[in-house]
Image (cartoon, rainbow over all chains, first blue to last red; front, side, top):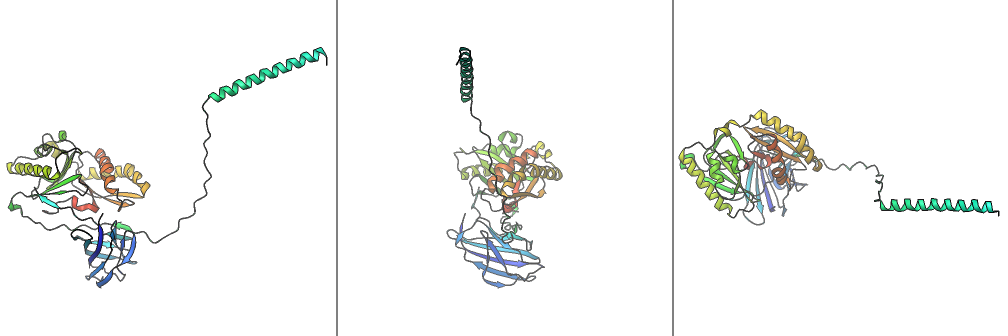
Length: 114
Length: 269
């Protein structure tokens, strides 16, 4: 398990936007992003970051408190304490008050030609 | 006291002594027997209702967007290898289709007889099992293998490249004919989930769901207590794989949707 110093997200909203504050779960704790920018209206792009400084077990983006939020794409950049940063992109997903989308995946292992 | 009374008294004493001896013998006999204790269970208080906390959200998985193709097909056969984080498997990703429209699991060298690709891969010392899915090979090695993954993967890659160059059929007709239909797989997997797997993981508030079937590969989601559990991968590989393969012969890839990159070729798709 990696110790993550900083997490950065970029969320592209689809056709259904939301007015709810963007929150995420880190190891089961619900948090809001530091220095958020952009928006979560239909077609808008939200960007946020958080200095986690902790070992990651689980990270998930919460759905809105009410209504639905259709996400077109989420891009996450992980900055670990040691080693190179890595980023992942996820595709469309619909979120609501009862769910959250997983945003955690360990750093990919290196590849080599054979 | 008369003689007759004395006689009567002596008779009573004698009978009392006999009774005492009989009781003593019974007690000694009982003492020799193993003791049996009655089971005891405490009267537990009725549990109070649990305190309701914040809403527990269901964790869902969005599709992972794979990296764009790095190498075009006309640049020759290229194979990349990637060792799993636990070091148990190595995935080899080719820019050529190896098994079109399906996947196949070879659990041992004997199962590969007649299929040139499997025979070639099992010919590399240390290879224990082989999964072929479209353009991807997933190889496991025996615990006592002396060769490193780099050595094994390099040899496997060379043999695959040579076979692709020969133009020979990589698999026997038996393998291709034995691939079950998606409906057969869906029914069989759902049955084993309902009757074996989920009753087992329910103790940890886990729930395994069948997300979809693509050809003869299945994609599952590990939810509830399984989501984020450090033992999820072990549970999947040691327990669920075996249950699925026993229930559905001819089943190919088994992929956890939270690790989608393992199921497709992320570099050459």
